[in-house]
Length: 46
Image (cartoon, rainbow, N blue to C red; front, top):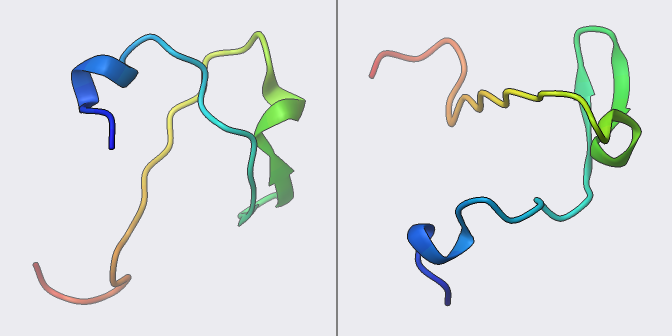
């Protein structure tokens, strides 16, 4: 498995997810800055 340093600067693989604005596909955002924030367990402490 590649290290984080080896992956830095490379394009992320395409994926889709549900957002507050509907279903979003990463490839639809190509050429734009994207920040992803994942909650492992939403609404839980820690």
